[in-house]
Length: 113
Image (tube, rainbow, N blue to C red; front, side, top):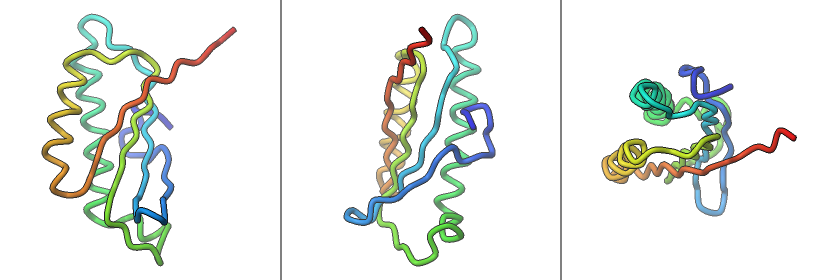
């Protein structure tokens, strides 16, 4: 499971106290050079899958007895994100706030030694 598997939900959980569905995206791609644009398009495609999943209430298949009021999409980046990616996430958050959907980004470096 990774950002390149655009039709797959990488991870899903819930927070009962806050009636929040929490979804995870694991992004292992870099943003170097000309690949930055392609990377943001891949991320956009992945997020669109997650938004469809939320809007169509597909989560009810996994959590049939749960009612969610809020939705969080955590993106775990392997590499530092660019200013353009930050802008994309910020604009997305502004538009999604009316649906109680929030995107949160994390930088997760992995030691390979």
